Image (tube, rainbow, N blue to C red):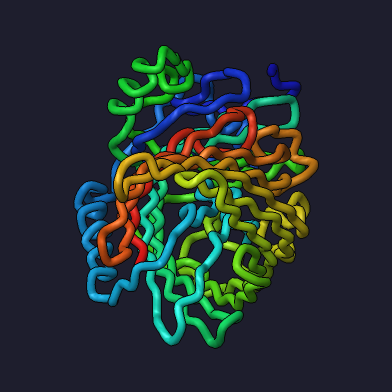
Length: 376
């Protein structure tokens, strides 16, 4: 869309319509002043520099944490779909909702789950009253512990850490999309391995976010109640424990309720679906645009196709996170398709490898998420 006012001018302006692609980034600080539109002349060069050590090193360290679950005893219990929650920082900083898998009874036992998500995300919206860019790679490592309190009730605690980087995946993602016969012009127009996260909304204020090597996330506490052998309800709160810079965390206490049903179908097939309701008060410099109540829904299946190996697919829906920004990537619903492969050991431990794709590119979903996890 064309702009009806003076647009920002910096090295990465493309003037293209709202779209997304993938990532790998070097930070691009835009020139900011009392009137940034007039202080940055067209065609001016903006220095880009990386302040990060190798993300590959961090990924190796994060993957090593997955071995923690090997220390936890692993009784053989049937498992369903993996847990899922939005990774895009404009989404994660608003909602407490996600998909909560049905937890089978584990009398007097602790269970654990370690999940590593590494996401490639790019957003670009330019219109008469808005300019929004998010070009980053996002890391989230989550440890979840749970324990039954009785035949029907259980408690959970999630402790996440995260990071936001320039990244290294752009070349690989170009190749990946070429295999699928997809060409994303945004990947061609954005420089490789360059970071940019900024918003200029209808109020005219420019908000610039920065990278962060590693930060603590918001701790989540939950209580679950099983309604028989197939349905459960989980009530949760998130605490504002994050050390992330602005744009990556909620900053307030949030709450959510998710009800999940697990239904065995034919012998190798299991269905799981969920409905959720969440509340997060407005907070920070986007308060005027933030929604405070949310709904979610999911629907997925797991297919045990050979021995102890399974495939899964789960479609997750989330209501819009913002309103009035005029940017579809902020104001529209969020859809994500989570799918992958699971290997169950003889003792019941599950190793999984998955991807999450965005089936609706105009919304706030993420281009691609690589997922690795282990559940006891």
